[in-house]
Image 1 (cartoon, rainbow, N blue to C red):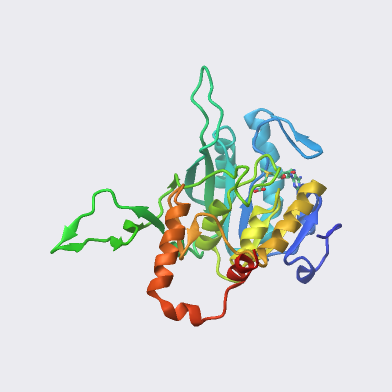
Image 2 (tube, protein in one colour; image 1 turned 60 degrees about the vertical axis):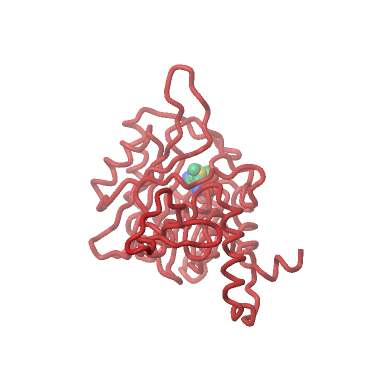
Length: 313
Ligand SMILES: C[S@@+](CC[C@H](N)C(=O)[O-])C[C@H]1O[C@@H](n2cnc3c(N)ncnc32)[C@H](O)[C@@H]1O
């Protein structure tokens, strides 16, 4: 963890800076970011550690966002991708600003399972991620983010499965991901990735963004790092990262998660190179065992770090 800001990129890489991203973004090196993940405070009154973000009018939120967003743009490579998180209240303001500065390519909406019911309104159970790029020259790896789903109506052609596979655990199809994500679980108390941070993102969500929009070794920048989800997932997926977080306790939490990520590379809901449906952990574990028993040669390879950690338990 670094504070204050180091001036050279080499001393920033894989570091968490404890500081105010809005104040220091102009001091950052130029054109070093392959993937920018922005998860700023939404336009809600919310306390993050020792600081409280106060809800403002949508017009003021738009001005606030544009004020620092425009200053962060020089940090991006010409080939960079940006993923910007928001909720239904802030999303329109984010979109207007993004349209003025970058190429908006899509809006991903993801379902938050958690959420309080409302008496006179619809329960809020979705969030958005704006998928943008700096130019038309950008990286996108759809094969890295495919979904493994149970097949409900298994169709056969000439007696053979059509675009699905039969396994000991059931019938599955590996499909292209859409811009509607319903396979995520917001971290809760019994999940290993859970922390005390009030708006921590699921590792599975960040893994999708990183796998789709960066290569191994690329640099992922998250200036609102929170509990460090982006940094931890970047390490698990062999990307480099730079993170900034205002609150010292969260920055420490993030540093701890990065340390753990060096030897535990598991990401709940992602295994075997595919993303699984929600609540399919048992199915994934069973399937992994079946896969291994069908490939005895795998046991001759040295154990992965993850396997070693499991062995010690
Ligand atoms: C929405 S949360 C990010 C959560 C994060 N994605 C995670 O998974 O843990 C926003 C974070 O930005 C931090 N923050 C707010 N203003 C900031 C600023 N000016 N500079 C750096 N961090 C800031 C807050 O403390 C909070 O942890």
